[in-house]
Image (cartoon, rainbow over all chains, first blue to last red; front, side, top):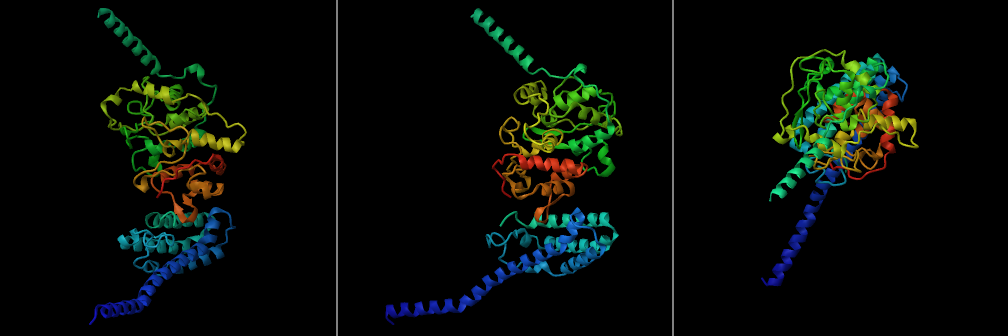
Length: 161
Length: 304
């Protein structure tokens, strides 16, 4: 075969391979992005649900046992979602600058990450029992929950994007 | 040659005299104390405002044990490790028998009862701003605490620092012996915050970067200290730093509960500080916040 034809066939081959692989590569990039989108949304929902509880703990919102119980139960349900599974490979902050604050520690210490999340679930369960017992009990339990949020963030979440 | 030697000896003598005079401990006399009836209850409040237990209780003490001021905590500095002494009312191992005047001189002048200089790791550079009445109240409270036996280990420092007279020179350079000066034009609230922060709160002892001699850098008050390991960095708490986005309410809430904006919490040594700040009134925490927000922004936030 003449050289120019070999080059031509190789060229077509390369383009063909790229076209076939592109959806797979694109899908992988897409998957990571969607996982980031999902887990950010999840955390926003946790914040939204816990909001009234923090408000009552601080005294910005009037204490109401019914509302507090409802929010605490929702929060407990949220913590049953396997949140750590949303941290798919290749989506740490160094991989996706500007998109996520997830630190590589999550992938280096997956057991610790899971245990920290499980503990938060336990704190939310305690919360359900405590919030009905008055503002002081609510404030104490919310304080513990908040310390749990902060503990996980200080280990696994960067300060900025 | 002989004349030269005599002249040289004279110069040495003169130099020694200057050194001796400059490094002399400057203390208050009994006549300098105000006519004040010490209030131990208010002294308890000052105990938390000044954070005495954080250094002087036994390392790892919790709850009621924090009132047993046995000392022993080691503070690592670039000059060596200093061990906080026993300041319980024990007469042999603590400061039992110290008068109010002795205590005021230690806290606000950094001079021990025996006349020796104290190392500025004891934050008298901040405590020099405290009102003498507040220090006397603190003494009255500390007199009610349990007497604890035992002494802290000796400081692990280079031999030359053992000559405490040298600290007189350090004080000559870096202490101004001035009481708290209210900021002209600032509100009573901001001034209360300024007093708490620059005096008993001694926030700058951690949050202000230091020069090679271990003294606070001019013009960098509360601007934070960067460290190689982000976990050892101390934040810039002027409006030019991490607190730029925080409201006054955010700061006051953080000091009260340890919960920060964005579902963060205090870590490291700030946890103990917050536990002390939790004992203050809402008004005082808000005053601290108001003062911090009123500061001119200084750059230099250490990166995480």
